[in-house]
Length: 310
Length: 271
Image 1 (cartoon, rainbow over the protein chains, first blue to last red):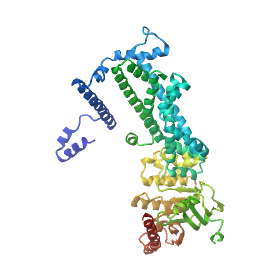
Image 2: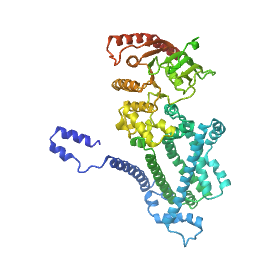
Image 3: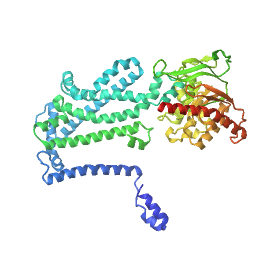
Image 4: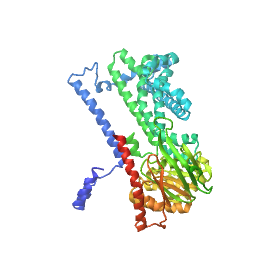
């Protein structure tokens, strides 16, 4: 847009010929252009970070045994991937000889961690919205639950780790439990806050039309809080990623957290950074996916609003 | 006392000694309305005029049944008002359309609540939107419309319920002057066709003169009826006629004391 405007001005002042010459040979649609620009900046940002790291390594400030730069930890991916088959060995008991390929192990590990994140996120948001809505719907329920929710929401999720192991032992259970317990209390409070912030007039209109309390909730309040709840969900996606690694690394399961723990125990910084890079990419992709869901589900919000405001 | 004034069952709205105290019985209690006696005939256009915060919107909420009066009674065609009803539609300053519904779904919202079928709803929405001249915008979303159009949709939504009384709370306050004038003309057409009574809250004297059959002038804190001014100007109205000018002057003088008093009170509160 900004490049075109001056061209037009020049074309208007000078002859038509120069205006024709200055017109770009092809023009991308605005949407594609915005997407390309944004992707370009993402790439630039990451490259800049990597470049600084490489320079620090080159001048000898970053010891490659402790802080291996990207070209080292990304340089030999097959070598890195051999460590990932710990997951499948743990899960199905195959030995080193019949172990699956590096890629297979990677996919298994990533899927295991990702499915815990998503399962935890889904369970936590459904439970939280139900509890939050019930708290506003029934005064008694509010009085019975909210003080406890308030109290527990300030407890660090790490404190729940022993509880997760006591109740669920090892496997998927404790990891998912950790995600749920981390998100649930905050999401309940968020639900209640957003219900309280629904514009009064939207509710008044429904009531003057003769809507029952249940209809007001179903047709006005829930659709009204949906946009804000999806933002809450996205914010909590990162929290879910964080806590799932903690849960996995302390031995309550297997997955990416387990790889981090393995690299710690075997003093393998290269593997640590490889896994960190992998988690970064996965976090970014899941956030992107959720953003797409958001744009699809909240069709009534202006597109720019979804991208800029949320 | 006012409560034994005679009233006819034919009156659309009858208020007798109506008062409202917010947060009654607590230290924060304050009286918003007191001693309101008001009769609104079927098909009458009554404007409630007063300084901001004088409780005139509160009176609309009481008549709508969204809030309960702490004193006195509100009757609607002889029946006491105890809860909201689609016979009394409320229209707000903000259009308060549902952004996730299309224009026609918004208009038919009340019918959807009653469980009407899709065809029935679309039919009724079409009729109501034609009345406000917006049939073409049926399948649009509210955010695609201008402020004036959104308010017309809100009026169509109210009309779709075939209300006997339209309660309008500063409905054009957020619009620019030109749009507001157009909307006033539009509202008079709608009013005459629908035959409903209108209670219209505003703090604009011009609006009161242009629209009303009667102007109810409020005092501030608590809101009481200061006086009721009959508006006999012939319709369609000429805003520049000497009679309209005289009425504006009269209302301005009536309001001046109230506005001064409200200002003095606010200053006293802030020091």
